[in-house]
Length: 195
Image (cartoon, rainbow, N blue to C red; front, side, top):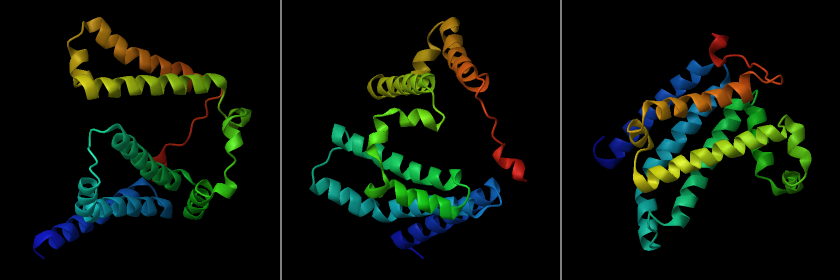
């Protein structure tokens, strides 16, 4: 096939095949194949909807640099990734779809749990939440730097060796201290052990 349809068909077929193989490679479980199809659907949909999406943005006068658009883009990407994580982290496909349904059903979501201590009963301690919050702030600071001034890696490469080593060793120490070396650490099985 020639033209746009041929390009989309070839790219979509290749994408589905690659992600199907990636799913099978991750483990002998239907959930990984479904995850592969999820990624194939997202990439194919982005190809099919690129033109109409660009036209709609132009008609609505939405600029890529606007804060609203950037927030929308981040939330859209997070939603797509979160749904994929439900699929891979659930024990099976039925559980994944059940959890997705419950998550997006206002009748089953208890928003009060966000403001009481319920989250601490899910295996997260106060120090875990602090580590998560600080880590997110560091990541956001690096992202903000890269948006405004350029590559953080290039900037870091111009600093003295001591600063470069600290930039590597401090996060590693945080991971070891608050992760592996904690008494509550539970070693999960390596995903590829199934083979």
